[in-house]
Image (cartoon, rainbow over all chains, first blue to last red; front, side):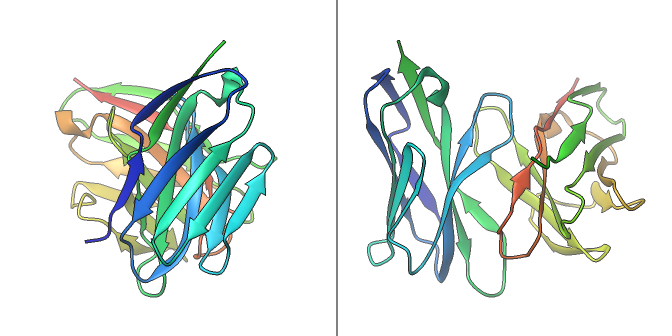
Length: 113
Length: 114
């Protein structure tokens, strides 16, 4: 069964600190993996998208990595800000056939001043 | 920056009533989607729509649900006879291509069934 597992479930950090969120998936065959930021009560906003051949991709203070061999991805947030408080969701898509994405449950990040 | 617009932002309805959730996708996008997120749970795919027909649908999208593109700009989700368990955030999304590039979500409609 295609699954996406994220850890930790929740994380509290101080403003200015770095953090890393993890995503493990069993989706196969793999097409792409996307990290979203979802503020409370809002729709998900895309941060990065990576295909099979990409190992790392950055978007400002967000850097995503992908190891397609071990089926793991991480999202690293540098110099956190209060506005980074949100849920971060990993979404994996199959290649060929179905285009239905598999969502992780998300990591809830709280940044304290 | 182009946005996916959803209305209303919050809808309260009585059990058994029909509701229509509305979405205006980004104008040059060709693929349209509905998702739902029950409070505290993960986002779940409902249906994708292209060229005026359903491309894919999940097990959640049963006969109580239907989608329509009534004109050149709107994309709607209808729930025929709402149940308490239909209470959730419903997100519309659109994309330029089926392979997910340019995928954009709306801000959602919070549906509360009482």
